Image (tube, rainbow, N blue to C red; front, top):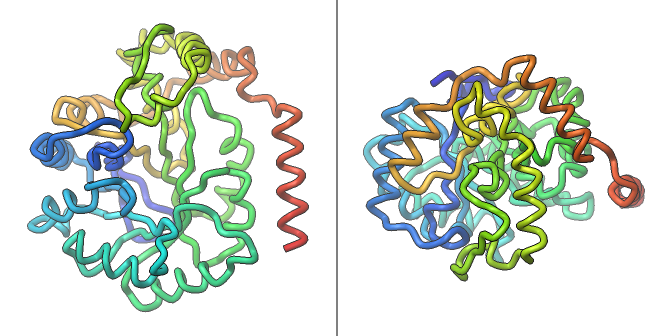
Length: 317
């Protein structure tokens, strides 16, 4: 495992991080606690030192609290404020108790507040100054929100989706990210699991705890068909999963890619087999060709209109 510096901070985080949403058992099916603990232990053994969670991820924080008790100094811990009614400061205090720690390494707002909610940024900054959290940022639902977030000089990093099937939003702003020198956590590099090669056009999701159970079959078929266009990457990477994880690491502006991990077997793949380097130049060039052919790098008219409206709203707020 190799490590990258998280923006301007002193954190050297593993290039592949532990995405702890799945172990909470809320959105991707039930998970046995023993399997979750085994996955975390194996990840640590293989060099992973960064874990990302949130209070709304079911039992995730409680499981991490149990796991980290005797090894807190070995991990960088990231979690989020998700708009709980009691407010950010009270929520953080509760999370610290659940996680059995007295500080968070990277604390994020689980969405990007606009100018009308500037008080949330003020509170986040105050928590950082108080030492309750070491570094702070935002988990972006929409990459279009990054422009306003980067105006906040105290923001140390952000989290955003970025995958072979979702390249456009982040790449279009990669120069701005580099200029501000902030940490970048990439999530969803496997695009809801469709870049694992496990699913086909007839796949269904029947677990009510699995968010994909709400997907219409047409969306599943389309996503599978697009994912199949990247099968050529298996020739060098070994599997589509490994190639999908390598893809974001091809860009030095990316600090870490968090991989959703539910058991020891997945941990061995995610943290023991993902090559530290990104894709080769030739493979990356071919990826860009495929993305262009699929229309993934173009700016659709509706998306550009949403961008323009977003920019106008930010100016008016």
